[in-house]
Length: 398
Ligand SMILES: NC(=O)C1=CN([C@@H]2O[C@H](COP(=O)(O)OP(=O)(O)OC[C@H]3O[C@@H](n4cnc5c(N)ncnc54)[C@H](OP(=O)(O)O)[C@@H]3O)[C@@H](O)[C@H]2O)C=CC1
Ligand SMILES: O=C1OC[C@@H](O)[C@H](O)[C@H]1O
Picture 1: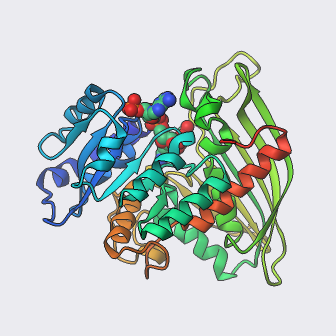
Picture 2 (picture 1 turned 120 degrees about the horizontal axis):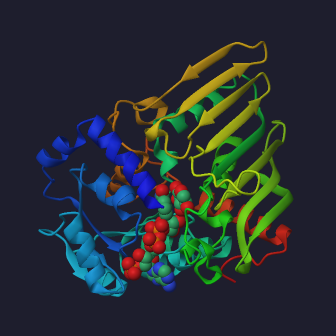
């Protein structure tokens, strides 16, 4: 599955001549030294590629359950000179040369390893979904504040300037307050093997956690978590054929009531890990872009590819009188200002924020820097817990 993102990134890098930039980049002497827990498929796109263009970050270790797998990833990405292979995740955490870790483990293992890493004095960038449930996320908050180390959920879309621009339009009030939000994300028919981590209950499988962008984005554009009240109205799963506890797809509605006089926002989210065949017999192998729409009092915003805007997106605003405006924002924007490059992926923007957060030792409240706070992550996990309860499926991780 990760090959799709990797191919798009390859095209982006070729188009913008990023390989030349990588070849001439000099690392700073005090670069943040980062270890990776596992040789996951997503590592190249989400982490190794961004680090290769960041002067202030260096990968010093990869640990996998089988050391040869870690070594193979080090070799295939030419990380050899500075990067050690380990045969366990504990060895990465015990390495005094590691300042921070990236955790791309299955979702059901995120809490355990994030907490272990924080207790070993490492800052943590942990893949989405941050945990299996809201209670685990509260535990991470507690340990993060006890240790003074950061934990950041890798919701990379939140670091992209196009997303900041849409948030700015919503918050400007130009078109009134938001009243309804729709978000959709899907994975092509048969793209994932039946034994994928996403289909294993014990590893935190299911569409809600894996495609948690749809919940995160509805909450982000519809409110400012954690101060709003979110009530799940409906939730319908399509159950995986091999495991009755796995939601292969979900469709849910919830309302967000924010403090103040704003109208409640009606949210509708849809996520699918195996898009059904067309007319029952034609597999859908053509990618369907993640999609978001926001109804405001006097206009609708449609945002195509809100998840990885780097690889092509559009923001279309249609006012009630029919006037249309289209925007595309690849760099700058209201949060980053002049920081960033047009070829930066959402993962590269995310790394920029993570490294800065680690350096300053403070994630939330850094001036002019995007961040996903742990209380917000907990709020999103709380919505997912409620959706599972509503569907009559077990809350993950319990
Ligand atoms: N930000 C993004 O765009 C994306 C994020 N993700 C997220 O990244 C994480 C990893 O996804 P992905 O790379 O697709 O997954 P993979 O299955 O490729 O990687 C998961 C890794 O987890 C390790 N692992 C540890 N215990 C187990 C176990 N019991 N069963 C299976 N694997 C185990 C394996 O490590 P080892 O190498 O030690 O054997 C494996 O390499 C998930 O949290 C997912 O949500 C995924 C895709 C895109
Ligand atoms: O970006 C993504 O696309 C497909 C998913 O299965 C994956 O986990 C997600 O992060």
